[in-house]
Image (cartoon, rainbow, N blue to C red):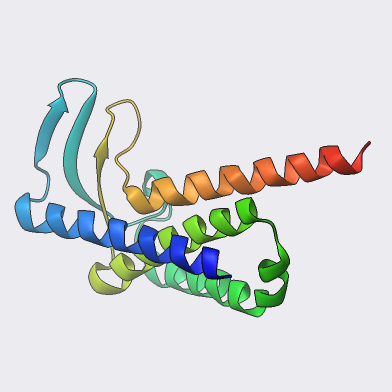
Length: 149
């Protein structure tokens, strides 16, 4: 569980810190080309979930995120016995979820700024959640393969 807490804390810190820089150094809607046409820093505020889905349903997202995090606390003993990859993955998911939850509570929107031009703008919390879910699926697949022999 210590592993999960450390990964969650580092993820939350990096997400919060990068969003703080964006909020303080960029104007809403501003876009700074890092690699023109490929990668830009673009400050937007997303009122919904991924791709702006369910825009304006802030309380729904706060409730769902809170329930997921509460579920992790309830599953403490099981998580504590899980393997390192699973704990890392849950730390990434929890840290990312908390990062976006803080935005929703503070601003009723999520601060996004990573803009690859071929994908909707996102943030480090979204990245952590995506990587965490991918690791959970990979871990589950590995466990399934071990059990099928």
